[in-house]
Length: 220
Image (cartoon, rainbow, N blue to C red; front, side, top):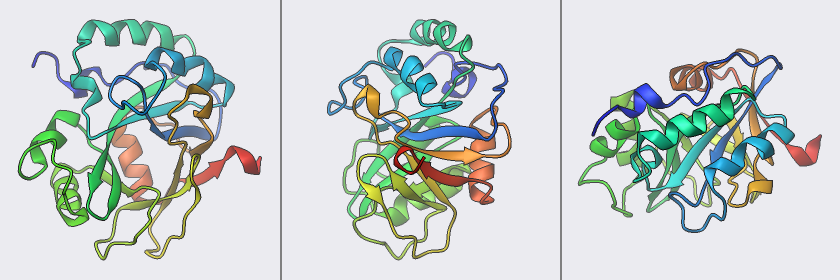
């Protein structure tokens, strides 16, 4: 497979000066989500305009970092983003029979291998996805829930930029993400952190510890 996703997940390693640190945890692109209508190269200027310090690409049931563009594309993206201090990380929006779960693993390839029965299934249960996330030390967030499974997630998407606000019956930490499928949607909802995030492990830890808060552009 070549260089691991874990080794190349940083678009920028430069520190971000603004505080609090604002991340959009739920973004799609045309690379891995056919329902999205922009290239990842479109993200920097929209993210910058939205005041973001980081973005997580969470394609639908697709390991973005394993696509056919190859490692060279990541080098090119890195050069484009580093000047703006934008950190890009990779997660996945996994479809289940009980709704979608946003999973943020230390290694996207590890998540693909940990999902039971092989990657590409659309009939996972939330319990199966949570079990895989727990084995990997990943963060699992219930996205824009239309039902509330019995299995408790690590966190819930309180604000979704495309679909509004959602109830949190679990008492778990709350996050926000734009669910952007068009570039101008990036940053419509977001998650704020008081501490700098340098990598995916930082994000996982801070959300699980509840050291974050959701926000959305319409409330500003």
